Structure formats: C-alpha cells, structure tokens
Length: 395
Image (tube, rainbow, N blue to C red; front, side, top):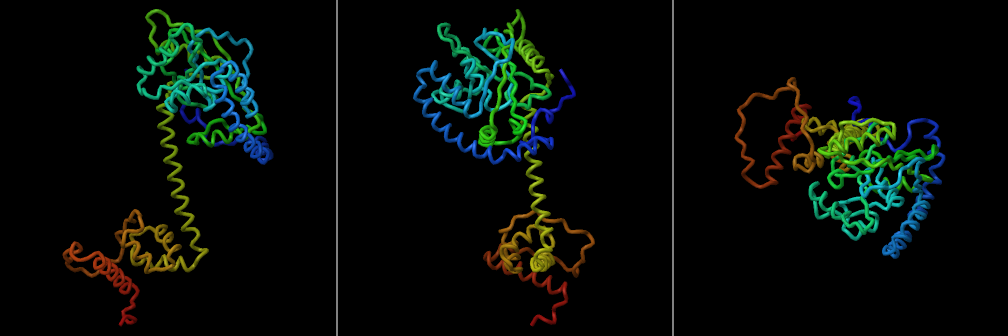
C-alpha cells in the first residue's frame, strides 16, 4: 500500500496523449476515426435490434454479441495462466464504462445497476437493483440473484465503485462482494489502445456520450483480463479484511499499488476540478472582453462614460451590455433596472468626495417604479454633469 498516492494521479484530465509522437498520430488518424465512428453508430443500431430478437437465447446471443462488439472495436482477450471461473461472484478493477460489457461476454456474469429497470438491465448484461438504495438491501438482492443452485447466474462487481486510469493504484474496495458471498474470485483487467490513437479511456468530468464517441473513434480497444484464484473468507474474518486480500491480489497482478483513497475522494476532487474550470472560464471571458476594447474604440468610449456615472459596476458587465445596446443611456437604464447582474466593485477610499450634506430620507418606497427609475437616472446624470463641468451646456 502506498501512502504517497494522491487522487490526481489516478485520473486523467485530458483525452489526448502527452507525447508529441502520439499526438501527431492522433492528428493523422482523426479523419479516418470520424468516418469509422459514424459507421459504427449505424452498426450499433442494427446490433441492438438483433440482440433484442435473440434475448431469449443467451447461448446464441452472447457469441453473436461478441462478434458485433468486435466490429465496434471492443476486443476481449484472456491472458495466459488465467484460472478457471470457480465462483459465483467476481470482483474486478474498473477502468472504463465498458468493463462490464467486455467481461460479461467472456464470463457471462451480470453487473448490478441502479440506472435501468430489470428488463433493460438484463438485456445488456446487468441486474437491476433500482428499487433499493442501501448496501445492506443490495447485498440481500444480489444474494437472492445467485442463490439458485440450478441456475448458472453469476455476479460481476466493481468494488472500487469508480474508474481510475489503472497506472498507479486502486481505489479502496468496498465490502459488497464479501457481503454477497464468502468466495470471491478476483479479476485483473487491463485496457490498451493502438499507439497512433492512444486516447485516454476515461476523462474526469466527461459525459457518457463523449466516452462512447471516442470508443467508436479509435480502431479498437483491447480488454485483457485474467481470472485469479478464488479467495475464501476465513473463520472470524471481517468483510473488509477479506476484500483487502482481493484488492491486494489484483494490485500485484497489475503491478500497481493499493491505497486508502475511495470513491468519495474522487467525487470531491471532481467537484473541485469542475469549479476550477468554471472559474477559469469566467475569468477568460472577463479578460477577453476587456482586451477586445481596443478593437472597438466606440465601445471603449461609451464604457468609460457609463463607468463615470456608475463606478461600482464591473467593466466587463458594462462592455457586454454595450455590445448589444450600442447606447450609453440604455445600458445605464438596464443597470439601474436590475436587468444586468453583476457583483459591485468596491469603491476606493480616495475617490473624490461630494459636498457634505445631510442624507435625504429614502422615499423610494413611495411612488411608482417608473418614478424611482427616473429619479435614479437623473441623479446619475447630475453626477456626470458635475464631474465633467458641463453645467454651461445644460439649459
């Protein structure tokens, strides 16, 4: 177990490779990839209908589905010295949203899901636990799923509960597989893509549609799996201790470390990362708006006039509205109306002080909205005239 691993090392933030040669390969392959992705979407639609027709014939459906998915680019290979399947519960590391499909094709095991109803889930190699939302209840449902000795149904679980890049360490395994069965068979999974289209499998914050597109885009994605020896729960052994042994067995086979990090750590990091992206986007829009003022002198001039009247309004908010209205008066009206949302800029203490006089009572609560608006505009106008010494121009 490594205590130096942080969550940032276990995720990818970019879809594309970091080396120059691999990046050039992706650029050269890109036109072909787009064409292949379009063809595979058409094939997928036909494959879905065919699989529905054969849903009652699992012995025919699975081999045919494996051929179709091979055409779509999903290739599953069993590693040498792989053990036989000797348990009704399999536990694997997680690398992508397609892991359960690949392993279902070769093991026939079903993966629990909360996303689909029972009919749809079983159709795509999953078992629905949608009506339930607690681990203890899910454990009971899954136990019942594999309880029939005359049925060969088995479960494929991903106790990390989230995918990683598979390069450094595993997330800490949950205890669910040990809750379901005292015999758990570890599965070590590794995924590779060709060097000229070595696009990362899963990117932090990406949508399922993005994952599917890039899966169709690459020529193939090779899933290599190895079944390890079944791990049996010892007498008086806790579920967590048993799953630690399963986790260790998989990490040794993959030559990576275990860790204390969990799905909660990944979710917290994802939330923080998305907030950072949002903040960067806001700042980028703000400064690009200000930097572009030189390209439009009229906007620059009008923005300065509005800022003189309403100095507490941020410049980027003023400029954004002026680009639409092309009018100082309309923009000032929009600001006073509350049409423009902004965070006020704090005024500096060395701003010029107006003549000292007692504050007048705030009577904005009396009268119509138009009267209050007219008064605000007139006050702003008087401040502008006074600041620039334009009294002689005003009748």
